[in-house]
Image (cartoon, helix red, strand yellow):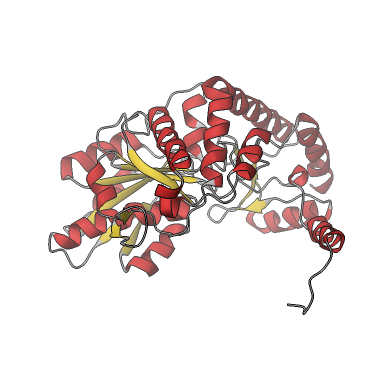
Length: 378
C-alpha cells in the first residue's frame, strides 16, 4: 500500500486496465456463469452494505431472502422449503452433508460415507477433506447418468446420504432421481440433489423430468441463481424439505441481533439476495422460460451444425450443455486450436470430449461463427 492514496481518475484508469485483461463472455463457451440481468445488477448495487450475517440490522433484506426461498422452493416443488441464500453450489453442497452428518453424529455414528456419481462436482472432494467423510463414487450408465445398481451396491450401514445430479457440470445430464428417491425412501437415507446448474433450466424444458421436492425421497436441493437464474455472483441457494436439518447447522451468535446463524459464512452479502429477488420478480416464470427456450434453440442449432461437419455429440443434449465427440488424441488439439482463435472451451474427463455451455450471452451469430471456426480447425 502506498503512503498517499491515488486520485479517482488514477483508480478508474487502473481498473479499466485490469478489466481489459479479463475475457468478455462473448467468446466464452466453457462457463456456467453469464452476464447478470441489468435489474439484478441495479438491485445488487443498491444493497452493497447489507449484511445478512446480522440480519436484525437489515430486516428489509431479510424479507427479500425469505421471499426468494419461497419462490425458489415453489419452483422446485415445495414453497414451504427451508433454507437460505448461499455463496453458490459448493457451500450449499457442504451444508447439506454437514447437516445430515451432524444429525447422524448426534445419533452415535462415528464413521460415515456418502455416495455420489462419478460425474459429481469437485465440491464433493472438498467435502471429503473438510468434513472427514468418505465419498464413494458410483459408476455411470451408457447415457452418462449414475447407474442405479452401482448406487445400491455401494450403500452400507455407514451411508448417511446419496447424492443425485440434476444437470451434471460436464455433460448436462440428469440422474434417474425418481429411482434414487425410491431407494432413499426404502432405506431411510438422506437424498441431496445437486441442481446448481439444472435447477433454473429443467423446470422450463419441453420434456418433463422428476428431480425435485415433488419426489418424496428428496431431502435437500442446491440451486444457483447466479447461473441460469441471471443473478449476480455470489448467489447460490440451499433448500431443505424439513426445518430440523437447517437447525442442525445453527450456531449461537450472542453478540449479534439474532440468536443463531445457520449459514457457513458469517458476513453474508445482502446485495446478491436483493439481486436474486429483483430478477426473479422481474422475469417471473415466463421470462425464465423464454431465456431457457432461446438457449435450447441455439443448443440444437449448434448440434445440427456440428453433425453437418461429421462431429456427433457424445449424448443428445438434455439441456444447454453440448459435448462433441472426437478421438481422445484429437480433443486437446482441437481445444487449443479454437483457443488460438479466441474461443474458450473446455474438455471433459471421461469420456474425453469438447464441452460447450450455451449460456444467455451466446447469440445466434456466435454459434454460426464458432461452427465456421470449428470446421476450419477440424
